[in-house]
Length: 302
Image (cartoon, rainbow, N blue to C red; front, side):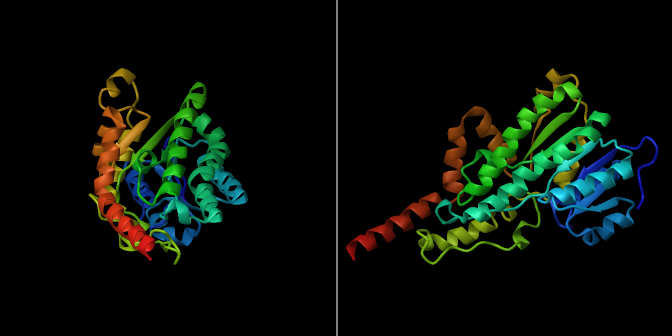
């Protein structure tokens, strides 16, 4: 396995399966001259990245022992100095709030939230040594009423809140934290196994809307992965000083990019009601209201 050249910065990225955002981020950091340490549960899927000269390490972000082994292996690669940690690994979760399975919910939080906390604790010594940067991949869903996405929204909102507070707590150690408010970006989401509505779901009348919503992120102003990765990497490598100047065009700890990101940023900045109204129509709520209303009327008449 190759390692960094003398003086070369290192970046560790989680969730680097080909076709996903993490894979695109790896390629872009490599193009920018950093030594990339790409991770996945099955490192054999990272053969292409290894051939380019990147280090590849097995990592299951939901397993404490796997994280420990990854930390030790990474320390051997980078000499105990990690410049950037990108917590990208995540799990989609689209299901009506009334139909969720709590074990399934816990699994989503384990991947989307608790794994980030565990990775930060595991690699903080290496990050402090480098006075490095942590990038946590959140989502626009963290601040939007994303129909049938209550669990996913809650998990990403937790990531955003955790990241902002973590930024304050790590500032004395010279470690920065950046949270990505990611819009719709081409990823592996559409190819993942999807949940189905239970036969007794109160939303059976709008099943077609639920199924449309399952792949919404891949069909709604979706940005290609490479474009998103280029912007994220460029911003992460940019200095935060002077802070007042950067704040004119976007806070250094709050990165907005991807499809629909501009619209959601506008609503978040100038009034949450803008987001609520936009989501009401974009997510077909008038149709949902009509069909479920008709269904309830028919049931009363029986």
